[in-house]
Image (cartoon, rainbow, N blue to C red; front, side, top):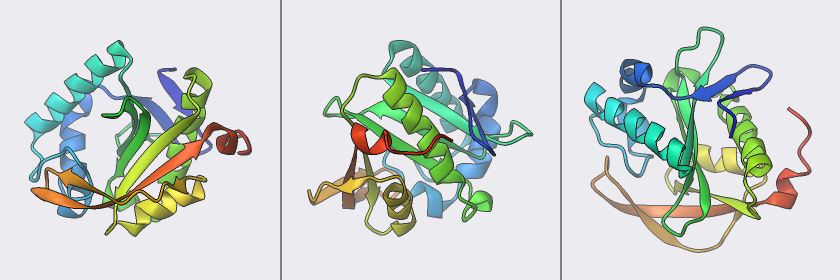
Length: 182
């Protein structure tokens, strides 16, 4: 996977330890954190530092490729991450700070990472999932061509402190191959 990816409006770059304070400030919102599986609420700077160090180690091991979503000022707006899940399949996950919602940044960033993932990894599909009470995430995945796996599931959310209904999606390689170039 390349360290730097570009779209028309965004730059996706490897996360770095210096992102910790911006990450903690931008993600520390119940509306964001309760839609994640592994991040706690509240989210402190130390949590961001730990996540970024683990992210760097996972990148070196080829287990996860987390990118900071940035614009011209290089400040982290959110994260898009391609990682191996518990079933050893590749999955995409993401979050975006509220101030950037509704501008089409997430589908753009996710499409860029998915394109790179299919280019760099020999995989027939990439999975994704979202909590049932987060329809905006479902719309992002549908825009990208993900297909509902029709497998009811419940996923634990650390921020919620409980399991919650989730929806599992899959993007076949041949669907992504039909995208227009970014």
